[in-house]
Length: 275
Ligand SMILES: NC(=O)c1ccc[n+]([C@@H]2O[C@H](COP(=O)([O-])OP(=O)(O)OC[C@H]3O[C@@H](n4cnc5c(N)ncnc54)[C@H](OP(=O)(O)O)[C@@H]3O)[C@@H](O)[C@H]2O)c1
Image 1 (cartoon, rainbow, N blue to C red):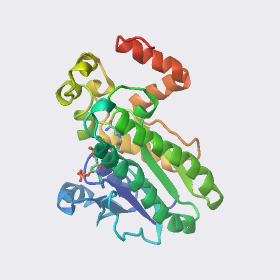
Image 2 (cartoon, protein in one colour; image 1 turned 180 degrees about the horizontal axis):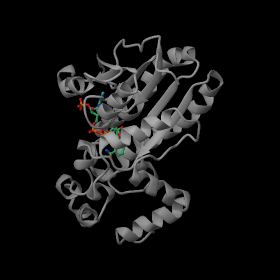
Image 3 (cartoon, helix red, strand yellow; image 1 turned 90 degrees about the vertical axis):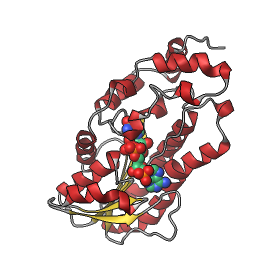
């Protein structure tokens, strides 16, 4: 793809989104960096100063898009912004937390994509890249809120891929396994026992906290992941593309196992019996 059109990356002030914006700018694209708070984008702008392309800030809360419409020369949309709240048992999780998560990880993506489609169609070779999670494929306890939002995102992405194919728009999902960002750092390795109030769930939560996890093992640097993600944008191939090493290993496990086998492995890990 040439780099004449614009690329929009959501959640671009930090973490993976920032690295994606910089990687695209390094390759000569005019990047629109969607951020909730423009004052948080100083280091992004600083890092973008000498790159071949450009980075312009767009104030964008995907959970409240207002009247924002992507520009008519948009050719790449990367739905990266994501939210993961506390790990909680379903019984303890307030519905507002479900709504908050879905507003960003699902409804925001749906609406922004809907508004971007006319421009992506006009580009003739537009690209939609949705940042998913390997967590979607692992039936982990206390993880239902975030996981459900990413599973919904996957289903949306699957159908969209077929719908937009006649217009030359490529739709892909990148399930992230482990990238060293704030989200990973605050992840599962240490959260459950602190977050969970219901004593009945504590043993499982403590067991979980003690387990080695992808999060505990750390992830790849955002810059490394971003390079792999952006490489993938421009290649034909399957819908779902594992890029970082944790995702590659996770996807190999998913591809070589059944859903039930993965569930049974989870029962074993948590030392509980299926009923
Ligand atoms: N890191 C991993 O290992 C991992 C694993 C699986 C999936 N993922 C996915 O990868 C993507 C990037 O995550 P990350 O690790 O970079 O997370 P992060 O470090 O927590 O950064 C999240 C980004 O999303 C933005 N954001 C959150 N809610 C938003 C909203 N309503 N509107 C606009 N922006 C919003 C945040 O902006 P503020 O600064 O304003 O909060 C921030 O820029 C997410 O979709 C995440 O679910 C990451």
